[in-house]
Length: 313
Image (cartoon, rainbow, N blue to C red; front, top):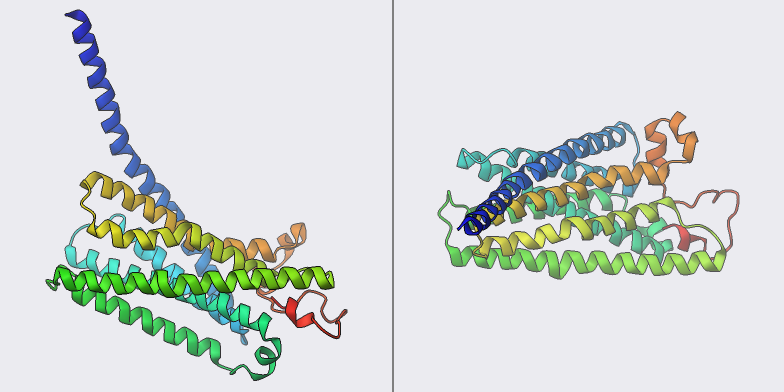
């Protein structure tokens, strides 16, 4: 009898510990996600301020400026939705804006890797025949596409608008195809091509690749590891019949992972652009410009007759 009571007491204690863990884990994850969002907003805000203060921007500075704006907006909405559940209208609006910012960030990063790949594969066209306002036009089109996707999702999938489930499934399927069938393959293909071409050229000419090349590849890798799984999970989590506790826990994990991705880019810029202890005495704008510089360092002192443009990655 005493053994049975003791064993029952142990089982009850273990169950209570398990429940305490389930109650504690979401709070810890939410706190970590909030802290990451705040740090990321500071970093992306600094990038926006530094690039906005400059008079003339390179094409990639234009892309990075818009990417930082999208990441800042995404982090802001993520931080708000972590603590906002009611009223329903406010939560719904923040979620739609968050989805809009996520789509814009994904498409802008795809455009960055694609244009950098084109600049390496077709250096003459990129230097002399590329339209002057190509970057600005592409950014405007990608923002418009992201906004259109978010508006369509709000109309067909919002509970406030009484969206039909079959129509919402169709919309989600189309968006999943855009993410997994277009944006992600183009990003991966252009990044792999860029990596192979620059590595081959650097071995041939014995020159180091530019910092911008490292920035692009690092940003793509971080996005694929942290933010892409979140985008995929949004589709499956909505349609899977899971307990509410598991959905809440997964939601906080997804918020933390995506916040890390959006917060990592400013860190990548300043780490890649730094020059050790010298950078501690340099303005942050100079470090950022060095990281986003398109030409190889020392190009003016040493310019081979052929193949140099291949290293402008």
